[in-house]
Image (tube, rainbow, N blue to C red; front, side, top):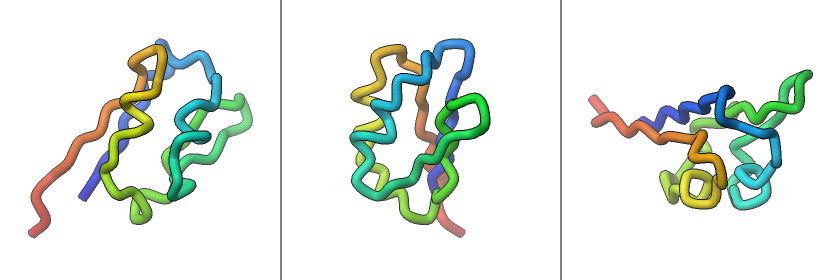
Amino acid sequence: MVAIRINYDYCKRCGICSAFCNREVFTTDEFERPVAEKLAECTNCKLCVLRCPDFAIRLEVSASA
């Protein structure tokens, strides 16, 4: 299971995470902040983490039960 953590203190709402996510995991909230809404679609490719210019995204992978 994957958990995507976004540090909104670092995030500048540029949309790069959404643009590079080929599974469309991210949506935006009313403040234009990215929200990882479709976690079941995440393949743990880490493109969002690698491309975020502000180091605001972290992926946490837990072992499945």
